[in-house]
Amino acid sequence: CLPPRCATKLAMMGVLRLLAPACCLLFADASLLRVDSSSSANPIRRVVTMLQMMQEKVTAEGKKEAELYDRFMCFCKTGSNDLTMSISSAEGKITQDTSSLKEAQAQKVQLEQELAGHKSDRADAKDALAKATALREKEAALYAKESSDHKTNIAALGKAIDALEKGMTGFLQTSVAAKLRQLTID
View (tube, rainbow, N blue to C red):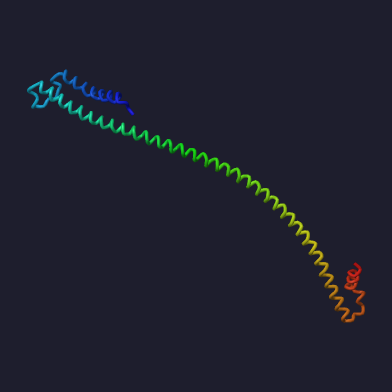
C-alpha cells in the first residue's frame, strides 16, 4: 500500500504531465493552433477556453486516479487480510500434513514388519507341507505294498479254501499251497 505522501506525489506528477503540454501551447505560434471560429476574434478568450478545457481534463483524470487509488487501497487492506488468512490456514495444513505423514510412515514400518513375519510363516508352512507330503507318499507306498501282499494272501487263502472244500488230493503240491505254507511260517 502507498503512504499518503507517495500518493500526493503521484497526483502532482499527473497534474504536471497535463500542464506541460498546456504551457507549450501557450507559447507556441498562433498559426499552429487549431482555433474554433467562435474564439478566433479574441486571443485571450482562446487561452481561457483552452485552460478551461485543460481544467476539465485534469479534473476528470484526477477523479479517475482517485478512484484507482481508492481501489488500490481497498485491495491493499483486503489483500493483506486475505494473505494473512491463507498463510495461517497453510501453516495449519502443514502441521496436519506433517502429522499424517508421520502416522503413515509408522504404519508403513509396522506393515513391513508384519509382511516379513508372514513371509517367514509362509516359508515355514511350505516346508511343513513338503515334509508332510513326503511322509504321506512314503506311507502310501508302504500301504500299497502291504495292501498288495494282503490281497495276494487273501486270494491264496480263497483258493485254498475252495480246494479244501472240493477235496482236492494234490493240494499241497500246488503253488497256492506253497504260498499258504510260507504265510503260516512267517
